[in-house]
Length: 350
Image 1 (tube, rainbow, N blue to C red):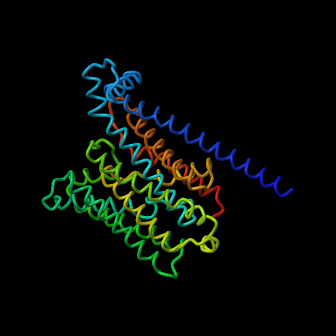
Image 2 (image 1 turned 90 degrees about the vertical axis):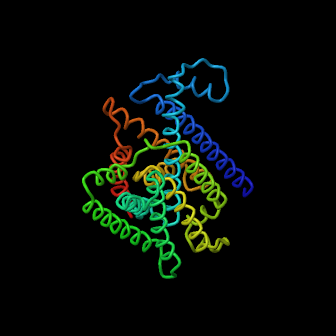
Image 3 (image 1 turned 30 degrees about the vertical axis):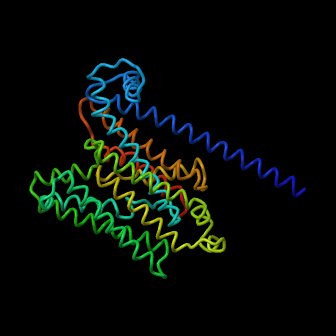
């Protein structure tokens, strides 16, 4: 009887894992479609078939593509489309691990103040003229340093024994309001032209993506995702509760600190190049959790794919709302994210 129950449980687990692998495959196919559509959409409208042919030519296949189409795809739009994929994935994974650590579906790098800190750092660099540095370097550097500053404050609180997940969330919200207030002060004392530059960066935009900053963001994101996947079992155990995770041999404090550092580096790098893009880190993990559950082996990759899908779709929508106009992608993600945030509030008991 016991062997029969065990065999039944094993079969049920295999079916669940098979369904999750199929979900990952479906999301990957949808993501490829979104990337092609993202490249095709813009002032010079291209057909999806022309985009695919240009991509095939780029990987060495003998396909005839005119010079103009190839230049538009490879030099202008492909870096932006891939940046949407990488940044969306990074924010999705960052939000997933924040929610795992704090056991709260409302947690994300955005709601914990990291994005607002990055915005303040970028604004200060613009206000101070980059301290002599090139603006293309100074603004991302300022955003990265201030995002890490916010993360450092959270690290310090996490090290205190009497600070739990609830207190960390409250501290993150306090940091969010603090950095937003300081950011408003910088905008208030800035000239109208400078205030406009700060505002455009705060909206979040993929338009300044280049092959160089794409390579940096991709390398950091992939490294951080691999480090998180190495702790997949420990993070899954943490979802059972801290006491049970400790009974299974997990060093909860060390795991929390390590994960916070990895998420902070990944989030700071992604945000520093594209500006503040909210709600991806909130929405994507909740979608992944509804589809795949809490098993981090599937929850993490699905959070990455969901975040990449959302930001890629938002990029398409930002170029399609008004023909010839380009809306900042951060506005589009907020329009999608706010109703989802309210849905979470209304449907969750906590």
